[in-house]
Amino acid sequence: QVQLVESGGGLVKPGRSLRLSCAVSGLTFSDSYMSWIRQAPGKGLEWISYISPNGDTKYYADSVKGRFTISRDNAKNSLSLQMNSLRAEDTAVYYCAKDEQWLVYWGQGTLVTVSS
Amino acid sequence: EIVMTQSAATLSVSPGESATLSCRASHSVSSYLAWYQQKPGQAPRLLIYGASTRATGIPARFSGSGSGTEFTLTISSLQSEDFAVYYCHQYNNWPPTFGQGTKVEIK
Figure: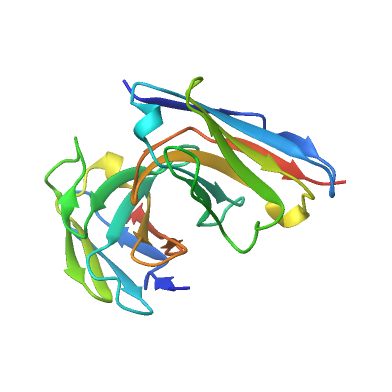
């Protein structure tokens, strides 16, 4: 069955960096558009980044543009999110998802807490 | 950016009754609208896409309708497992945006 498993979350100080990963199985990853979506504690959903199957096309929400970088390794069926210059407002559960415009499959999420 | 507004923050419904959830877009999104269900501590689950197409494995008691700026998710004969938060999501315009969610709780 389809599985998306995020990892890499944790407690980090403001201004520092963190790299999230998403391991994908059960689908043809190299043909899949992928996105990252986050959810601040007790809040709603916010789409933050998107990448095309070959990695040539990437989009970012204004809230993370210039600080976050999405990437993928199709040989390893893996999606990544490099997060730099982290702020308190980046505290959230981060989900990866298979993006068919609608978000078909989601991982279980990984919590990122930005605090001094 | 298109703003998605879900008119009710909370809906109190008795088991077995129907629930009607509303979602309004600030500009037309045609039929590029999805609905998700989220239970505490879990990831969202896709219910509906294309405004009215049920995702694989979603029971027929879930139905979606609407186009343009007004959308509805109807849950007929609510089961215990249906009490959750529901989000609408437009993917017609960049960036994709979500409503703030409607919590369906037991009355």
